[in-house]
Image (tube, rainbow, N blue to C red):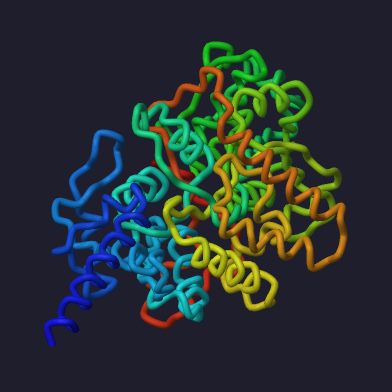
Amino acid sequence: MKLRTGMLVAALGLSSALLVGCGDDGDDQAKEGDQKQPSSQESSTSQYGGGTPDSDGSESTNDNDQSSQSGGDDSQQASAGGGEPVNLIFGTGGTGGSYYPIGGALKSVFEESDLVDGVQVVSTGASVQNINNITDGLNQVAIVMSDVAYDAVKGQNQFEGQAADIQTIAGLYPNVVQVVATADSDIQSIADLKGKRVGVGKVGSGVEQSAAKVLESAGLSYDDLAQVSHTGYADSVTEMSNGNLDAAFFTSGVPNSSITGLMQSTDVTFVPVSGDVASTLLEKYPYYENYEIPAGAPERYNLGDAVNTVAIRNIMIVPSSMRDDVAEDLAKRFHDYLESGNVSVGALKQFDPATMNQNLVVPVHPGAQAYYDTLASSGGDEADISEATASQAANEQAATTDADGAEADPAKQTSAETPEDNAQPTEGSDTSGGDNAQDKEPQS
């Protein structure tokens, strides 16, 4: 009996040593043993929606009810070799936007994994709060905008001195900068906005951020405009229809319902963000990417000529400490869902699944990249494999590139939200967002 007891004590000591040796620094935030899993979606949403605002404008909770078992203690045990399933808390955005129904749709997709015990979708203040929640161990998956994520990994602006240890599972759909002018305003380029009356979006919105950066890249500022109107989409459309504005900025998915409504009553011109303006913008702010609004696409304004502009991509992020096998399976199941033909949220139909690991400013998680590598190799095309490898290298390079003075007011860091569907994700449900694109003005 004494011999068996001694062997048991020795085994426990060896197990403890192994667990300590395999632990990740990123798990420290999630080691509170007395934290509890929210008992329902409602309590979790309430917790995130009714917290105390942090200095960056996001909301934080006053009590730590989020469970450390959601990727915290479970992750440590599994990383020690158990491979046990984890619980995930999925940070989204407001219930009226696109992030929330996307979370609802992916809940059942991710829960099909043997590595995932359950997924809880929570409504949050979107990008800034989602990153803070992942850093604090409160969320394990989240959707954010690339500009906010870029600042987070660089530890700049509202994340000054507090760089976030996050990685990407997948790149999602873009928020497209759309500059629309009345046909009789004679505005054909961004430079032509000089001396004109322009709607630049509400103060503190993602639209205003994009407007200021685009104007800056063309060598213009608000002082060069005849009138600066801090109007949202609806008011900009009204003022353009009444002849009180010459042009307005819209940053959203394509199509934007406010623009389609304007086109029914007013002749408009889509102003390109291209050439030197786009090059300057992309060089200074690497989270922008080129985007083309196609010609002859009835679901995208049915334009006579294609319009070249820029966009900011939304991405799905996780903590860098997430187990490789979990990250790999999440990427696989998300990709398979996009290819299944059963996608229920319109925004998820607006990008090519083949680009999920390409042109990202936050490095792809190694586990997710392992899955993307299998996609490339399964095709048997060495060129595809080389392209995937080059894309990953470019991602890592972009993530370590300075923004060259890219300054942003913390209150203006935003997440794009779109009223597609206000349905609440429930246990086991697949929340449909319909086929409408994002068209709500991004707000912080």
